[in-house]
Length: 381
Ligand SMILES: *Cc1c(COP(=O)(O)O)cnc(C)c1O
View 1 (cartoon, rainbow, N blue to C red):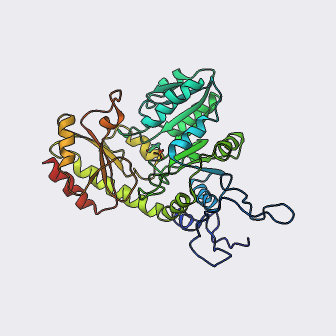
View 2: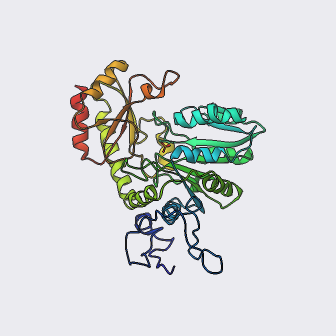
């Protein structure tokens, strides 16, 4: 296929988002790529597969395009796409050996913790969950068999910030790899520049950007044996996204840099409006100077993200009642879409969760920030 590439790797994120992984379709001249639903591809007379595709579980043109686009934007050597963010997490853990030890943050995404403890615990994975704002606690948790330090920042749902560069260095000193769940901070946080080995995203969130696909990615800084293992679990394990999800993912990626800009700007305006507003006990947003992680966030992020959480005055009932008075903002889980969503995290995370009962997590969308603020304020009154 003599497809004409429209970009070079040196171009800027806005340009890569529009062009990376894309080419004009040589068969039709289509500017937007077709969706390749075929599961199988024809062999040439000599037995080879001239397009590089043989069977869709192993490789599909739409998946390759999506992976190439994410890879260019995150700045890795290899990107592997999965059927969800959780499948991406699973394939990282599947690259470890029974008896290996993982250190992860206390406020890790609850599904990831569940996978580590309940799922992989049965296969001999050891895991420790520590407060990663305390680097001494991480150091103390390192064991001779520690193979992986998992970082997630800003954390879910209280937006704790941890020092990625310090944790990556600590991992390497211990002979372990460092993984960053970068779902909450695409483009505004560059894990590979901070020494991280693997970056992962639930692309269901900001990368897809429209709350209409389930897809996950792992990006490897180096094309090494671990990257090979990621491919193994994707291709041989069959943890693959469908061609349509990949196509929608690629479509979503085109606007990622501009959407992130708007999410970050809106969230910071909303956070400032709510800080000190009657009925609000606390606002958790790393862009606020009062946030305990603000200095580290300023060092390792170019903007502070579209997620924030608030603690309202009162108990769980008061928090739920506040969400019931909202008119514009939707009570729903997930994040990273155009709609502003609000969620009472404690009730979704279950009884064991340490999330404060009066906490509401807000995924600030792309509406006008004044409309978002007016809705929140009328519900708080
Ligand atoms: C949603 C999410 C995941 C899980 O991704 P799915 O696509 O829902 O499987 C993992 N990490 C973070 C930080 C998330 O927000």
